[in-house]
Amino acid sequence: MTTTATQTSKPISFDVKSQEPIDIPRGPVETELTFYGPPADGSAPFNYVEKPPEGQPQRNYTEDNHPVTIHDIRGHESEYDFNVNGFGVLQNLPPSAEKDFTDDASIKANYYPEVEKTLLANVPGSKRIFIFDHTVRRSDPNAPRAPVTRAHIDQTRASAETRVHYHMGDEAEALLKDRVRLINVWRPLNGPVVASPLAYADSKTVPDDQVVGVQHRYPHRTGETAGVKYSPTGKWHYLSGMTNDERVLLQCYDSQDGARTPHSAFVDPRTKESWPGRESIEVRALVFG
Image (tube, rainbow, N blue to C red; front, top):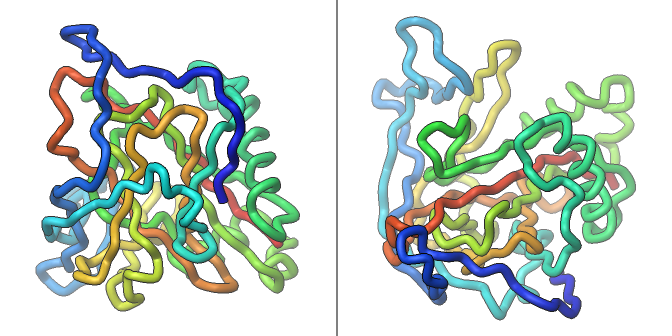
């Protein structure tokens, strides 16, 4: 599902200290990923999106770290399809009308329509798009949101269907009778990415019993994300040196075939401290049809 076109130039990352161009790490990488571990007391797992109530932890589940090999799909992008593997790559998209990605209203006005157009053009059968939120992440101690270094899926079946009811109101029941997908459209803002790359597992290699619903507690409602247990069968991938004109589509839910994509940022041991930290945006959308 790769879009191709002639391109005049590619951006270059520079080492912050030396100002020398960075030789982008390529190929498979051995690293450690953080997986889901159940709460020690056996209770239902939860995570507070914002500051938790007095006396409550931010989350009550534990972490389970394992070494993994993450395979580079650069040069093999077209071999992966989000309908089959849960993720897919789009390339050579035009520059966005949104330049700074610092103001939510501007992002919604300028970037959301581009995402909608991209999804309608690249998701077979799609008829209607509803974008319900976005997250900008920056590798900066002062940034509101940083890359998430924990294997997870943005939604479960239950929470995806709840979102349809929450956002679509009286239309929800009719929409749910047809195919519904929930897709995360991910792109860097300061590519090529040389720190905290995004890894994603082939959906077919992660058994359903390794995916655990986790209460995602907002101040006004409770949703559900999914923690991902370690599975030795899991095959993990990344796109080395991902650039601003590339997108990864991460399918979090599909009412028809069930493909869903565990994903996580990871620490690449080849990254130097003086290299620029990753900045990115992910836009989450309900795709009908």
